[in-house]
Image (tube, rainbow over all chains, first blue to last red; front, side, top):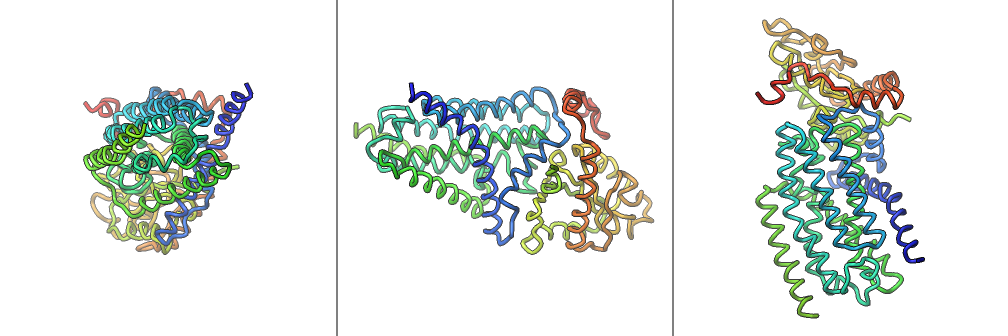
Length: 291
Length: 169
């Protein structure tokens, strides 16, 4: 019984803290990117200023369906994180996250704008690129720990990373897509003057855009949670290592973001699948052999 | 507490000009001036923008374009006319197709003179525009219930786009 209470409390802590951490991460991202470009950059709190400003703007939506699906995106992004941090089933987390991204794609398709439409198509291509690897992450944890349960995975007798380095590399690769970092920021981007304006976000403005930002913060914290799983095992000090590796992964993604130009969608899809096959699948085969 | 002053996003449009002011606008984004330290983002998208930064004058051909961009920016919004051409038509003001400065097409809040306007004066103009933006937001502050009513209201399409055009017919 106390276990269940503990799980629910940790889920609620996620609901409260994830937007704060996610927003701060976004602010740190912008600051570090600016420093990498030898600029001063905006204050760390800038994403929160943006968020509250967007909430105060005039609500303009192209149609009612769009707002409905964006709410769905936010809801399912929050829900999948809640399942994860309440120590739920990893498969459930990944499928809920997929529903969230489907909602986002439909929201982008809801408008007639060609920018939004092409953005939605690219978002679909991105989903195709990262989804196999997400499933292999869950499968890898199952083969190694014998369970999809996050609670038992963080208590495993040895560091998960030692047995699943390939899967970790694959996860890092698709995290670039999920974080919308530069080689793969095809469907939408915060950069100016790109060929698709803001891609999937072009027709989304004001409070609904604020909802999207919030959903991304929740999503990013959840994705870093997956990185955390790789570096946490039985000893009491291992969460420190897990959080340090989350920070390192996020920083290296920012570095890659500032070093790379955007690739074509064919290249993104094929390279993501090659990495999934070479690193992820080979690792899964190894884990199956070990059993 | 109003956050709009800390996060002004702008959309930039060039009417009929020599492009000199545009280059100065882009110079504001470079490491030397770095307007992002004020939270300013140059979005290419009017629907995300708070500030309409416009260079060059208005002529008969770009009149509907300027009006449409203006209509697409959600309230509260501010228009900043950058450069002599945007303020008064500049050297082009006698051309057969010119209507004059940007204020002939849309209401302008801040005029930034100069040919070309220097990045410092553009940033200064934007900062002046922020005060106007905050004032407008206070004036627009409406109760939440009315905001919901507004949300459900069917908005008229933009000036240059009518319903059939929007459907792609």
